[in-house]
Length: 138
Image 1 (cartoon, rainbow, N blue to C red):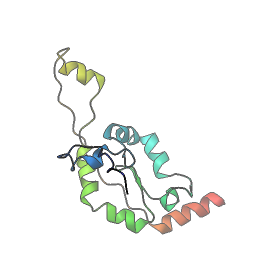
Image 2 (image 1 turned 90 degrees about the vertical axis):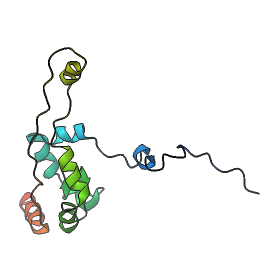
Image 3 (image 1 turned 120 degrees about the horizontal axis):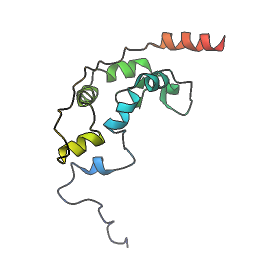
Image 4 (image 1 turned 135 degrees about the vertical axis):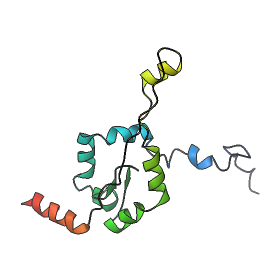
């Protein structure tokens, strides 16, 4: 005879939130990605060395979503999805800083967050990656 059922780790009405609470599928937060959008960090992430442990050998990386893709077709298809467009929209507002939180608590005057214009990174083709690999080997 089997034992009792395993205990559920969420409440009955929270089925739509279960995926958000799971840590194994945890994505990078918006403030972490904001740090990646700075020039020096962005160059490092977009021009990574070949790493066979990551999908696509770490050559196809979406900077805004912090995701790796297996080839340029998958990455270019990702640029057209709702997930990517929503992430771009969410990154338009600059993240809150400690000074903003102090102003919200009443220590200073309120300054509305600045909006910035974000564009999808330029699509990379496999030919470009092969050329870069050949140049680095020479």
